[in-house]
Image 1 (cartoon, rainbow, N blue to C red):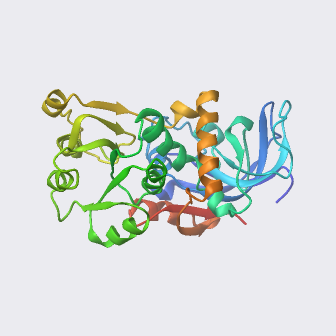
Image 2 (image 1 turned 90 degrees about the vertical axis):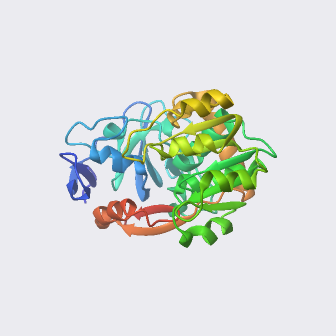
Length: 334
């Protein structure tokens, strides 16, 4: 590899994981307000699957980069960058266009404001598993949801990286954590991860079980990336004046508005993405302070499910789509 080129992942059409191509590309010097990072690990996110499929908030322009999270070492600074230095161990924050700054590469250019140092005790693999999950959980649960001690929160798709991060954030806030999973195989894993209660939706009635847990009151806050028909059940299991935070669209079915539950209970249904935080400096600073404090105290601990090599990026995407993971999928870069 020469000093001016590096391998990166691009795709030239939307589709399944096979559209991802690992190729050698020229690497420009970082521009004003940018840094160059020698990547050691890449964290995979569901957003990248959807982006590759053409089903994300942002549409790709071909050939397209992709990827939000990487950990590595700063190799070069662009003009005007004063808060970072060459040699810093850093990870990237999802605060940029994936198509423009995607981080699936050996060396990548990203905006300096979207970069943060991470604790020395964490490995690069863990460093690539911080910002998407913890900022999403913090923003939805704390900043928007106002989660506080004694409140109950229901976390669906709880074995995902964001779901596990949400469990940790909710326990930091001293909330009662109810999680859901489709099969019993992940029940004990979620209990070990900090959940107070696990509802196996393939075997139990979700509304009935939540009402049992909450003594008939319903859950105060719902944190859900699934949507679709599930939303009606979540609304039925919610308490009066509860908030339902929708941060994803994993269901491929239409999402009906739960009108009668919303009217009867005065529910608030709120769409949310972490870009609400990452595009505003003050809100991002508060979120980063919360995450850094949690990491320092050991209350937030990235959980890694499995690692793949850089040449296995297609297999890594396919594994994520299999929904087997319990935690973060990370790709290591030699």
